[in-house]
Amino acid sequence: MKKIALIAVAAAAFSANPAMAQATGTINLTGVVASKCFVEGTPIGGTHDFTALDATNGTMRTDLATDFGTKNFTVKCSSLNPTVSVKALPLATTATATAGYDNSIDYNAIVTVDKSGGGTTAVTDASTDTTATTGTVGARLANSTNNVRVTTASYATGSNTDLLVAGTYNGSIEITISPTN
Amino acid sequence: MKALLAGSIASCLAVFAVPAQAQSVPGTAYAGGSPGNITVSVPVRATVGSQCGFATGKAPSANLNVGQIDVANWTFDVPFSLECTGPSRVAIVSTNGGLKTAGTITDPGYAGLAPYDVAVNVARTGGTTTGNCAAADLSASAATACQLRGTASTSVGLLVNAPSFGLTGSYVRVSAPAYAGPAVLVAGTYSDTLTVTVSPAA
Image 1 (cartoon, chains in turn orange, cyan):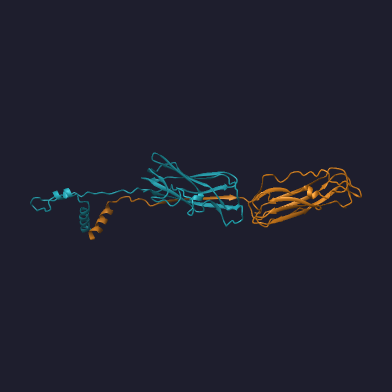
Image 2: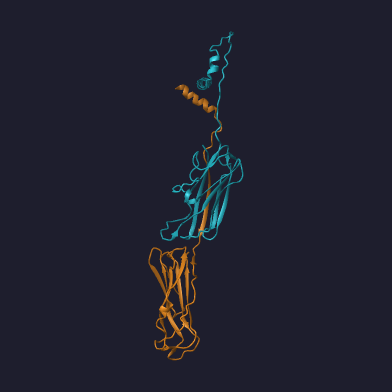
């Protein structure tokens, strides 16, 4: 037994440059994703032509909301709880309206967005004022197609009996979806 | 010490004894007599282990800012140099299995982990050895086997089946196209750490 131990000592004396243990290097990577929102597919926009705004009796048609329908868009945001801002501008013509006539149609624009995890958030703006209405989604925007929908409602002239003056009426709905920082 | 050395030689004789020589050598020497000395032959055998590691100051080491990972493609090469006198193995572990942002993302359709690719090019005697894996396959818990994954050992890692000693041209390449979904990457800072090891191969 003693000899075996001595053999080991002798063998060690003959070894040289033992194998180096594993060596290590380190690479650190860092990147960033900015807070942003972007449209996929159809840009938010387009034109809706009501053609005739007046009914056969000269007053405003009552089916304009149905005519406008629902406009679908797909928006994606990298940030939590984006902001939705809506401003509706009335349908108006430059022709002068005297008593019993109207040259402007007010309405509400409603932007409804889908929330991640379920549910929706709606932001409604009336064209009767000049201030945009702003709200937050309350969650991440759902990462899905057609997650932003635009509808209209409550079309009205000054009086239900007002006749629409002849002319071309133009209005618009401005929608801004912004990321949070 | 003298006793020890004697013991060692005696032990070596016991181990490396060459029977033919041992039998031809008389077992006794006589002062002033014949034989007057004994000649012994001690076969000596030793091995030199394969030295292997990164050249001094030339281990892969870098802090890379890859920029906006969802906007532009990115590629970086991190050079290194081996000092391996024999076959070696190179292996890598990714801490996160991708570029990861803080927190846990549970919202459906969103992600906090961005994929990228890792490739290794080792200049060796007679050519190069290459390997590549997705970073996801380099995490310690990855389900998919990848030749680069792990901590290098005699049996783990990309096999470089020839010496590579002080050669230039070896590098770790990390790259990715601009992330394009389908999940949306949440805003934030993303990071990962690659640990690269080299070991002698079996």
